[in-house]
Amino acid sequence: MAKYILIVAMFLMSQGVQAKTSTIQRILFELGFMEDPSVQICPENTRIDLQASEEQLWRSALRAQEGYDKCEAAVHLRSLIVSYPGGRYYKEAYRAYVQTFLEAQDFIMAMNEANQYIDDNKGYNDSEYIHLLLLRAVHGEIKQTWRDKGRQMEFVSLSLGAALTQTEDSPYLMNLQYRQFLDRYPSSTWKNEVLGMLNESRQMYGKNVLSEARLHIMKMDYPTAFQKYNVILKWGPVVEIFEEALYEMIQYHFQLSWILTNKNLLSDFKLNQFLKREFSATSTLEERQQLSTQTRQQALSYLEQMKKNLPQSQWTAKAIKLVEAYPIL
Image (tube, rainbow, N blue to C red; front, side, top):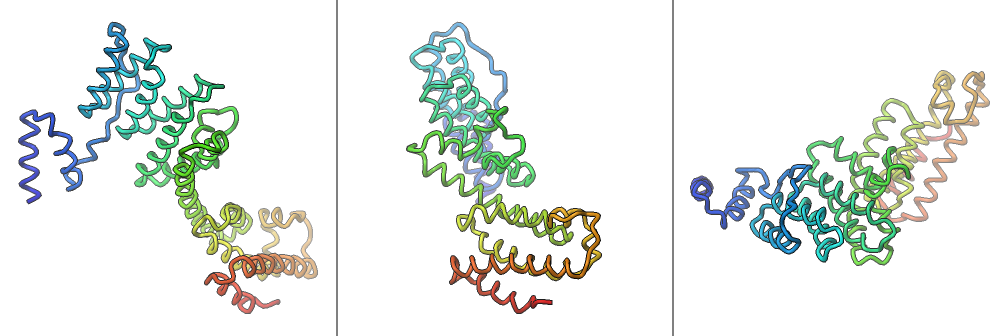
């Protein structure tokens, strides 16, 4: 059956049956015979039509959109924006222009054009919807890059404001974070949608950070691992892996309290820095026991918080058993 559909579809497409092409392409995509037909990478420097009137450009853009030719629609919309910046269709055209790239799943161009609009309209109150489209583009890029985890996490970091490149000196990158939109438009109609995107990014980022923390534990780099765990703990139970991360934080503090009794490990620079002790200082048994006790107390402190706030959690029950698993040396 699938083979028959493929043959018929290819025949109709070869005959130029334009009106049915989008439906056929969608069937082929869903059957796995072709890439998503809605994906179009439009040229960055679209041509500008300086001859057509504002009304003609607007109507041409609408016709192109109806015919599923998103890049052609972008040409007319871009021409309208450039030629008639104060015209009756300007704002609506700009929104449609960014939306065109979103629908084509050309998310980078959508981000670039939305950022440009926000930058050009500083101080005005009509950038909210464009900013929403920008965040939808960020969310779309995160979804689209699932095969490339490195790139995906790069955009997840940008969406959360966790990227080192995001500073006040880079306003375009600052616009990519969900929190900035929520702070800028606290009563937005689209608040729940943005909160949903924010939550998805947090879940993805949390899982990635947890994996990184475990890798550092395997290398016995406890200071860096604890920094990673703290990222998750800072967000609290809104992150699905919060309880698991808190359990591991307790476990590895107990584990470290045992490790600290070994004087050779106090020659580790990062560990000394974490413990706030002089790297060149001579280690005594008394000092090691004191450091071990302090670290154990930290684990017990985390455990008390867990028992108080998560009394029914399976991870709390497991954490309680760690007290016996790691007795005082």
